[in-house]
Length: 526
Ligand SMILES: Cc1cc2nc3c(=O)[nH]c(=O)nc-3n(C[C@H](O)[C@H](O)[C@H](O)COP(=O)(O)OP(=O)(O)OC[C@H]3O[C@@H](n4cnc5c(N)ncnc54)[C@H](O)[C@@H]3O)c2cc1C
Image 1: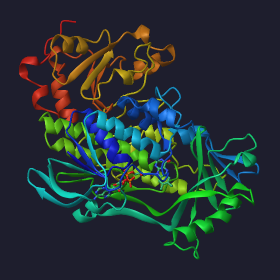
Image 2 (image 1 turned 180 degrees about the vertical axis):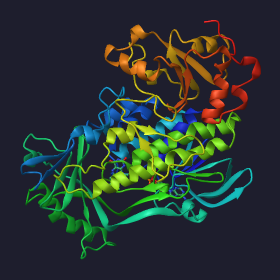
Image 3 (image 1 turned 135 degrees about the horizontal axis):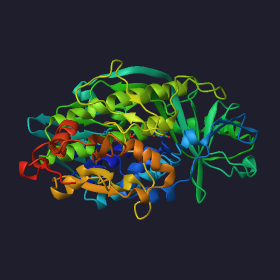
Image 4 (image 1 turned 90 degrees about the vertical axis):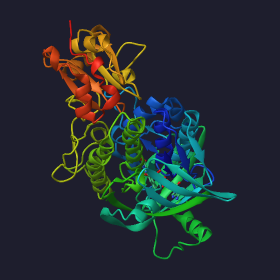
């Protein structure tokens, strides 16, 4: 597997693929992971995925909880709440074993890189992929490194090569959506802003006096600041020093400290839009992250959505590479992700048009629902307006295509999510499930069985357990390696209906090794 682009999404893809046992090489043309701050909000779903990779503790240590967004004349003046912490941080209270967090992208990327490498991925910096050729059985890319050029062949390619995606352009894949006018300017600077804060805290602030945003970066142990604003007509776009000089008065206005001498470390300019790629798959190439979608940064959705693309794709590529699933499984990547991406892009655009201080418009979907309440459509179906439907994650339906709900359990597992195998299907059911018993007696390769003693369920979550995993009609849930429900086992089914392999085949298009006839659990004695 070749991943082009070693940014947030490419490195996440590498880690997820390597965790699945796939041989993966990532090429990144920069010399190291990115240095200028971009994404900071890690939503609750991304934290769940980082937890499944075993890096959530490291990310928490590198960041800090988000305090929400405030609006003010400047950092020194009175602060008014704009967006409260749960919307921003996606707290996930009671809905997840983890909470959303604030950790800078440039701190997450090295953590992902280290984890991907430890899992067996090869990450090549200072290496650019050029001249990608497509064959019937794979792709070949030329790799350009300052010291050498070489060719690399792979069965599949994940294009995580960013918003300008040369690979998407070369394939002629169009973008649907609209440009967001203007050029954004972002400056990373160092300054002691405690005199402006006077013991208060604001990690994200809209400063009216400056027409700019201020973001705290790093964490208490290593604090820096970022100013985000729009390029003014007379600012020199191509002169970094000249641009930095123009930013000093804006930083002073935003902080409300007229004699501040900020030390500006770097300045980045960028344009954005609200775009979704028309196809996420072209033959053996899959677009992920900003290559597949771009959105205004409002809501902090961009990087999170990309990480979740990579997670949706990784197990499918692994299953096809192992020969456990037909190629058609890979088509479900576009089918599942594109509608949710279109909805997320529209939500980011909506937030970008909101006046600070005004209530959220009726069409605004809260960030927790977007992160946890996704409902992927069944293979082959298209939603009429091409956008996804979502459900309230506090009242999960347990339907196929939705995320397996978190149920708090007694230690050592503290969540039903901890019972799930990242590299296999997991059948989760109560200890009395006939289907679980049948599967234990007649194991199906690629399916693990985890039963839950109802006494171990946190009393606050017993009703949710009944609604989602059990109840009068459900004998347990078959859950995909990406924690998405594949099948609800019917309760009181005739023995011949307890047919997990066929359910896998239908729900996830996985076939061959997971349903050898001899292993079929067609008789249950429970
Ligand atoms: C100011 C700002 C704030 C943001 N805040 C948030 C937030 O709070 N939360 C959030 O989730 N998102 C946020 N985002 C969005 C987030 O930063 C992006 O969505 C994310 O960086 C996308 O990651 P990516 O890996 O897809 O693309 P990129 O980070 O752009 O990485 C693509 C990589 O591909 C490499 N590359 C390209 N072509 C080649 C090639 N041919 N060979 C080798 N390498 C190649 C590039 O060098 C680059 O490193 C923010 C963005 C901005 C600008």
